[in-house]
Image (cartoon, rainbow, N blue to C red; front, top):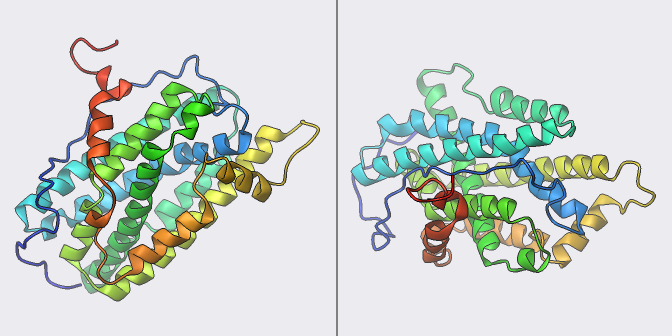
Amino acid sequence: MNAPRATELHEYDEESLAINARHVQFEWDTDPLDYIPGDIYATQFWNVMHLVLPEGERAMADVFAQALPLIDDERLHEEVVGFVGQEATHAATHEGFRRYLDANGIDISAQVRRIEYIVHKVFGDHGLAGRAGERWLAERLGIYAAAEHYTAVVGEWLLDNREFERRATDPTMLDLLRWHGSEELEHRNVAFDAFNHVDGNYWRRARTALIASLGLAVLWFATSAEMYRKARRGKRFQLWWPLAYFRAAHRGLVPNLWFLVSQTWLYLQPGFHPSQMGDIDKAIRYLAQSPAVQATRPGGAS
């Protein structure tokens, strides 16, 4: 692992954002399980967020908290603290809907066990110390920095997408997706900058990006396929899940494969920095009017 770098000029100083966890409030008592009407696969695709993210984002928060003593850049240190808080809030919020699925008889135990195994057994701390511990921390920082790139670009995709309104998507779930996506876009630089500050090796960044992209793709598609089969069980006709995915992508309800591949290619460019992505103001604007954020403010809904 390289020695931590001295304070340096950031590529995105003009943004000057303070990264802080927001209190949010989502109520699921009466929300439909098929929250995207007319497309069961799209609903299950986004349900994977509720299965994967609670464990993944808690683990990510732990890894970046471990890296904090190595970050001597005052601004970046403050951003990582806020990033850790936001990730912990995301995990708790998605777990709330996970419990709602369980309470409504959706068996997700096998999927949850798989996620726990990957997060804790495969990418866990393993009790390594010394040079091996430093290298493993750098590997995990690289993997999670790449994962954060995907969550940020998907977050921007969610904010820009108007097809959900045309399909009468449940507004509470849509708010959850866009609130989370907005915060991912808001802190898009933090994980990348933390990795570069602690290690910064391009070949580690490229290798961990490929691990993260392939691993996320396999995990996401396998889990959404399983959830889709469960949701369609007992129905007369079931479209094969790859065709269901391509139909949902054609309808604009999930990102298409080219979007995912092109973002991997972008991240692999040596000169890439997340600040090169789209307008961050769209995230700030959404967070200012998100119903879930408004509900926790004085005078908001109770």
